[in-house]
Length: 154
Image 1 (cartoon, helix red, strand yellow):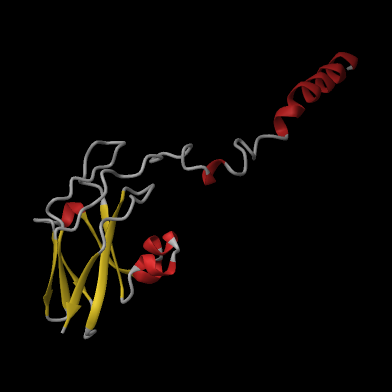
Image 2: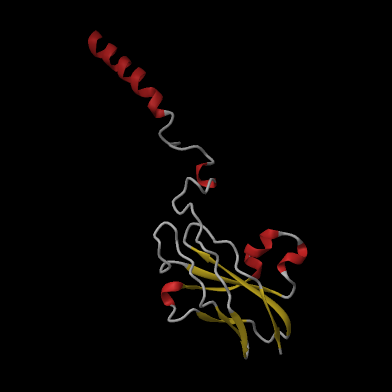
């Protein structure tokens, strides 16, 4: 009996330190650091808008010159293109985060769903000057924003 009691004490003494870290295998800020998360490199090069045109309640965004890829795979097939727009140039407020704000997002589309790199983005019955830009998202990170194009809608 004494030997089994010593063995139980020894087992608890040896295994107990492992019990305290079992539910915390990584630091709390591990997933905040994009360099540590899969998809750490953002899509590149930056998407390029070649032209904008009006078609009723839609703006046709032509980005045929875009060669953006997911650097983890080297492919563009899994990218999602995000389209943004506003009535004032996004630089006017001086806040670079505005380029990525959901408030300005007009829509998105998966690359795999495209037959050509032209997309009709719904803008409704708005009339006046509009500024349109886009980014690419690979499921982990969003690319830098494209060039900002302006269009006068009638």
